[in-house]
Image 1 (cartoon, rainbow, N blue to C red):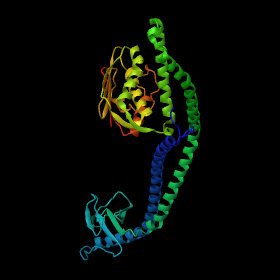
Image 2: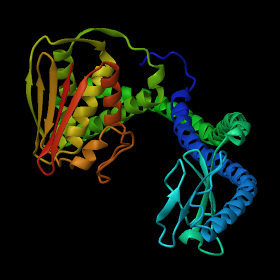
Image 3: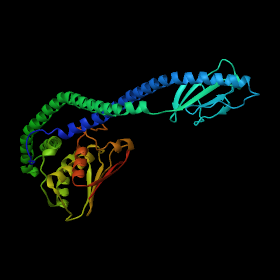
Image 4: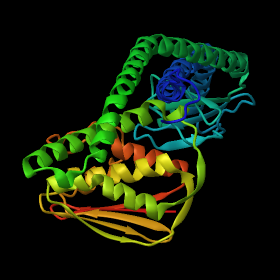
Length: 395
């Protein structure tokens, strides 16, 4: 039996992944919403400031237009454009071409009445008459930034407090919604553990008793019945081991040791011979002797079992399975249905089943990937539809 740290279900990892995914999405949305809200607040404060400045600029622009009118009337006597130390100005004609300008910012938006750009405030007014050919009079003053300094720290503190509050609220909501799911998963895992535990004892007894039978003494009809019982028992046993590994993986203690992988691989091939014979599948083995590897014997056996089980399950009748073991790699190749490149991308995801006509829970290859990750094995999979699949495990 697998060695366990305890019998309590630990959902922390799956719960953390779910919470992390939700939190990232929620944080992004909160960030976007807060940015929009504070941008609108910034725009409101800026427009408020512009309205205050507009009164001042309106007064000066009226004075400037009066001076332009005076200059227009007395152009022969005085041709000096009116200037002011506090204000810069310009005049543009009806084609929006500059007539004269003292502006520091030469980029002008004549379709607006007042705006802020490049730290300059521009106010545009259209005189009643085209004095000196001007349709537009532009007045410019620098932005003193006092308004922004008054709201800057309020915005920063307000943004941080609002963000933290929304994150806390989101975390609380996520935990609240996760609780029913966590309780359901807890009950489901407990049921699976109890069920698989109850199944294991009779299945083990069946397999043990079948192995003690001298099959040479049986007639063909009885032998076929015994073989079917053996195959069924081994299939249930393999499902039991898979379910146990999935539900208790984070609680299984790895008893790592230097093991003879060559002997284990031969034993696992022998174990699956009776199942393969039902589909008339032949094994072609090339197993190098005395290949040793440092790992847990139960976990490496589980990895091999799931690869062999898949090779049989998705193989065709009268097909073959090649099993090759070298010093630093193991290859299991079948002559089965094969897979598309799209399916290969999700091959090791839990509960993935690409052929619903074949039984199973879709957890076998996920277990393979978990074990490979624990021992830093590299898995290469190549497959071709209608030809078969080749899995290479490297260490």
